[in-house]
Length: 269
Image (cartoon, rainbow, N blue to C red; front, side, top):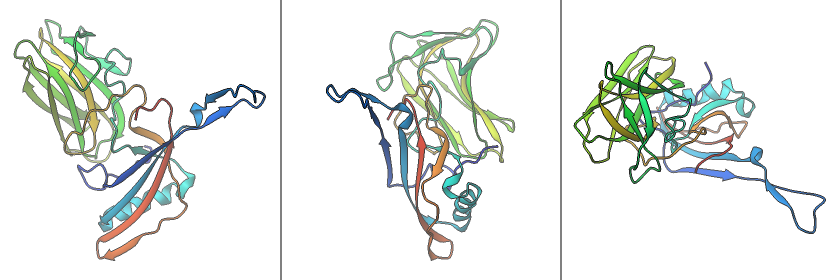
C-alpha cells in the first residue's frame, strides 16, 4: 500500500488558510534568436501547497512525523489529496473507460447540463435489473469520504449514491425531480485498507440524467471541479524541506508549516 498524507481530522480535508501555487516553464529554441521560438515544457509543470497546521493533537503530529520519517524527508514520494480538488477522474466524461457499468446499462450524452457543469449523461437501466455505474479508486478506506452528484429525471426515480470497499457498502437514496439538484452523502465507516468504489444506481427500467460527480474527503461538498484524466490525487508528491520544525504550545497542541510539491500535466485549476 502506498504512503498517504494523513487525514488529520475525520471530515476535514486540511486547515485554512491554504496556499496553492502552479509553476510553469517555457523552453526557448537556442538557435532561433531572431523570431524567439518558444514552447511550453509540460513536463516541468508543478503544483505546490503551503500548509499552516495549527492546534494539532499528539496523534495528528505523530502521523505527520511518521510520514516524514518514512519518506526520509524530501527524498521519498507519497500520495497527497488536493483539499480543493475532485478526486474522481473524468467527472463529466461518463463514457470514459475509467467508469464501470452493469450489463445492459445505457449511457448517452444528454441535451442539457446543470449550470455548474459542461456536460451531462442520460442513464437508462435495463428492464430486468438495477443499473449500476461506478468508478474504482485506490484510496484509503479509513478516511472520511463525501460523494456528490447532480441528477434529475422526468418522473420520480429513486437515485442511490453509494461508496463501498472490501469492508462493506454505504448508500443514500433520494427521489429525483425534473429539476437539476445536487445530492451528497458521506461518512467515516471502515478500518484501514485500500480501494473504494464510488457510484450510483437507478432501478430497473428507469431513466435519469446525471452530471458533475465529485469525491472529496470532507463533511460538506465544495464547489464542483471538472476533471479529465488528471484528478486531485497526486501520487508522486514530496515534502519540499529536509527537516520539520514543530512548535509545541501546550500538551496536545502543536503547530507546523509544511511545503508539499508534485509534478502535474494537464491540470485544471
